[in-house]
Amino acid sequence: MAISVFPIVAARGLLFFLLIPTLSVTRAISGAQETPSPQQLPAQFDEIAARAAAARDAQNVALAIQLYSQAEQLKPDWQEGWWYLGNLQYSSNQYPGAIDAFTHLLQLAPTAVPAMALRGLCEFETAAYDDSLRDLEQAVAHGALNQPRNEQIIRYHLALLLTRASRFQEALDQYSFFAEHHADAPDLKIGIAIAGMRVASFPDDVPAQDRALYQAAGDAGYVFLSGDNEQADDLFAQLFNLYPSTPNLHYFYGFLLFPHDPSLAIDQFHSELAVNPTNETDNALLALTLVIAGRFSDALAPAQRAYANAPDMEMAQLALGRSLAETGDMKRGQELLNQVIQRDPNNLEAHLGLVSIYSQSGNREDAARERKVCRDLAK
Image (cartoon, rainbow, N blue to C red; front, side, top):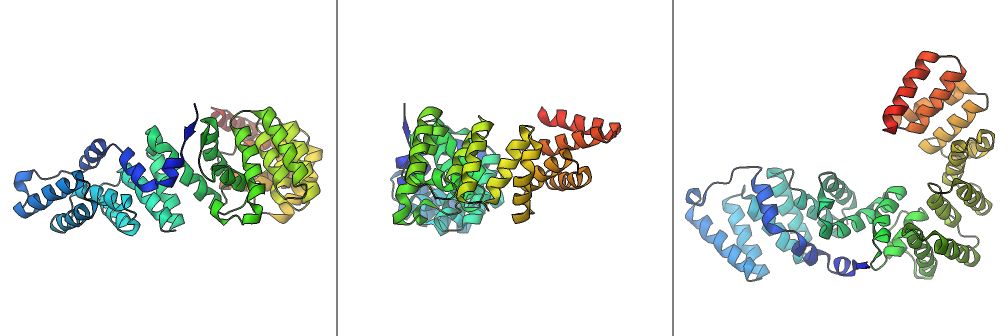
């Protein structure tokens, strides 16, 4: 059955506020610090807190916000008050105030994951995108996706932010969730196309004259991510006929094919270079795909092109290092692979390259060490 995320995106604040189980959240945040019993609280605070709760229950949002703010002035370490204050301000689109409330709460209870996630969504609405990405990633790392009803809105905003940050593969990983669950939302497919075509922007930024292109590319990508490879192939073929000279379209399809059918991916990467010969990302992924296929001589030229245009790109360093090492220049290949490992110690492909280099050079001890690293990483 298809799932629609349209209401979540169209009414972000209110629906997310309603979906968070308030009781479990208040229990979670209160557990981080002892809250004085009602008998220990000043009478004035008790009265205002009770009135705030009553106003909240009566859905008198404006009065509830006013009363929770007064209560927090009297007792700034009242975690439950900051939680409700932030939620009420978020649900009424008062995002700066909500950010302030959630910040106070997180200072008192740093592991209050719902507050972390909601602050990230508020920061998105105020265009504090770097802060939003940081908070949403931290919230996910602490289990924010464990509640399925909240998962869609968090993943959707993460995908948008990761695309803006040029972390396109990670963005597509988030979008794949929606395709696998047959979910839809306004501009979801345009977002998929933007990430797939490596454009660091939001769907709203796509010019009107280009929206048909991105919609068609997103439709094809969505279908592929949902698992219908045959229909996706037809849609991409139509796309290439309509837009034969558009950069990154063939790369997008090749990238999707790469984990499943490297030989077809190689064809798409070659087609991309016919459109845009200087596409360093396409050159690098083509070279890496050829390396994985054991076609080291064929990989050398695209790897050199990628490295010449983007010497700091890890994938270019990896592809060139492996292809050089396997075609005779083991010294330079080893240097490049070590550069990759310095940045990414868990890069399995780089360690495999070192196994080959040490084995060919007769360095059995280092080869054995690298084989162990590869076995550990493969686990």
